[in-house]
Length: 387
Image 1 (cartoon, rainbow, N blue to C red):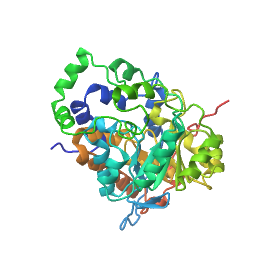
Image 2 (spheres, rainbow, N blue to C red):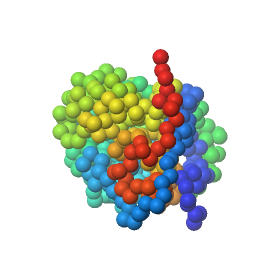
Image 3 (spheres, rainbow, N blue to C red):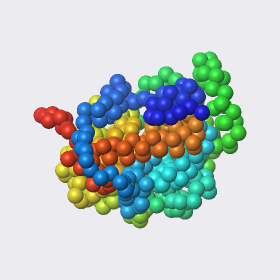
Image 4 (cartoon, rainbow, N blue to C red):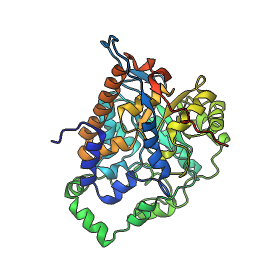
């Protein structure tokens, strides 16, 4: 067993064990991938203030996200097709999150269904909803989330139109998958992945197939998926969804202070500052750079979380010190899942927790909830001077 000391250790194993098309699906952004890169590199611009001669006994990373106790303010983000990164991937990731004491968010575009995850876990998880043109499907998905005992609905707002990811097109990652000689050769070399996939019955989109009229297999799904996302989603419909759900609502994909104010107006319980991991609008602001203006606009009125670019516990600390009350990891846990299944996700969480705890101590803090801008050194031009 390899000694895991950082998230990149898991990434290297993940790359060896996972078919290229699924690795590229995870490790890519849209267009030039500028936003994808800056989501991570902009964290590096922020420096930490070291403090000494402070009693560091009794430290705690425990916190709350939307009123739920968490071992650390880090949730597993919704990631589509996680069950293709590793057989039964969503179930394994949910189990790891439950064991560690952090939230797991199931994507609408998951391989394992809502019911699959609920049957294999004992604590409530969150469900991420994409709004489709078929509004009856949306209503049924919300009801299924209620029936599965989900404790929060995460409504993604930044995928009304799908951003183009060049690698997915070149790899033939469509529904169903287009198999080229190169792809077949690559799949043949990933024997561990192939054996695991052969042993599971979950190899399609479990929340979609069988839950929409006329969509019964991957071929019929391709026709539906081509024009499925609803470009008419607006704030009035967001309010309708909130009323229909009736529970805690988290709005994901906020990158502008004006949109944050709109989210507050429709009664959201939390917002996620996110650019979809750089997979939608290339050239958009990194999440960590967008956070300060959103905190200034609504930070004292609504819970603000941050997603996109987090690869370490130090990144988590920086986001929290900048004002966020919670963070999400996507690629970081997928690396662990593809590398080692459930154990790999647990390792990813362990690494991030240790980095957060030790960094917090060296910054002179005993409690994660006491973090603030006093723990950081932020460049004067970090926020930008935009016309």
